[in-house]
Image 1: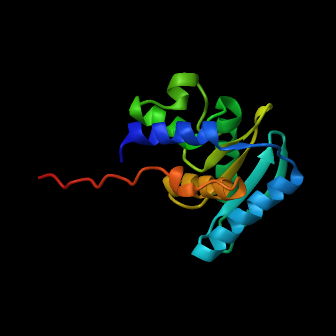
Image 2: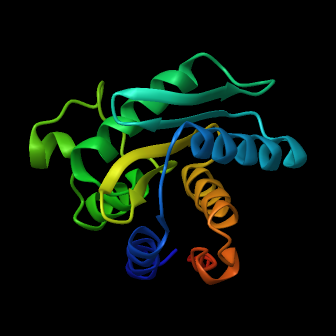
Length: 172
């Protein structure tokens, strides 16, 4: 996949997917929407929606494992600290062949730069929380969160989805 194209698309997602307001009912609707998408697709995952410091929605679907709550905690820490999606931070670090531990001194036990945690931006307030998906490959976790946000905001997901991954050619 092309890291540059992914990062450009993620920057657009982060800047344009903005809520007018975000309260407990919005969190419930977003989490429920995510759950419905996951159930419909047969995904085994965990979902978390929160304002920073306050979990508003949590769900573990059949087949989810307890460790997914730990992955959520670590992804949330990344978004809370950098106000960027965990996937964007991970892609930027991969591009520079680095890690949060090397660049920031942040331990991997508390920070995960794997995709799936997306910031919740509110018009006039900025980043106030995040939505997190854990259980799919990281790019898919990220995309499922973005798809649900698009549905919640009545935006066309096809205009916000990440570019299709570029097939890697086998080399001798």
